[in-house]
Image (cartoon, rainbow, N blue to C red; front, side, top):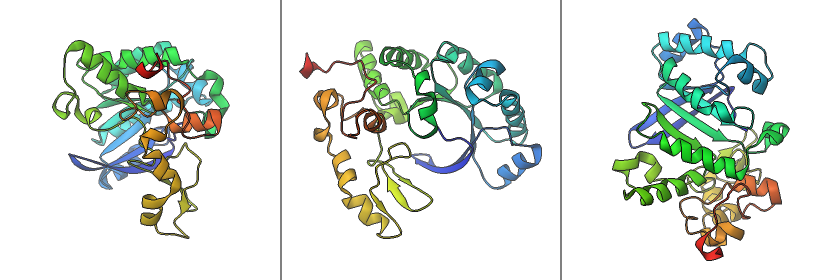
Length: 285
């Protein structure tokens, strides 16, 4: 599941380094917002998992969470910090996603990031709320359709299929996929765990991502560079020909790769096929 209490990350891009903090908004006061601005935080990510209090609070299991998030957003806006809305897509709010995106526009957000549930950590407790492979496909196609229809920056996270869909839809439309036409979506791939980033825990354990609990080494016992370059797990993840099942046969495996954490949770094998994918590879037909 998506972490969103008080976590800060530095994202590198062609535009330079960006300091982003991902709180849930409920603890942000006017004074805290000013301190965040003074500290150089360049964007805040606030989670809205419902278009109204009933849905959001039910998902969060905290009465008042929705109103608290909106109050936090108002303090953020007055402090002059750009913010984005993050939404975890589940059965509970699936039909509300368009309304949540419109709410993000009305609130003055600069971006909307949707997260597809990964049933690990806290996410295990709501695995029954996960959407199906078919709903996953429809949602990501709808998300693609919002390009050019909304002023928001859009990003699908833990949704590697989006990079396949982007190319399939662009091909149908007769358009090429490039940085000029599709931005960063054109120059990255779906699952980057162990390929473009990794996760280091508070005790030094190195994992491909925060959701994939396979330990690749520990920075207290070996150098990070050694682990990053030579971990057997990292090496396997970077060899796309080692993917199994449909993912191994898929013509889009170099731009998608499936969610390795979902595969591991479903089968115990991080190279197994993505369990929430409805695409049938050409080689499997």
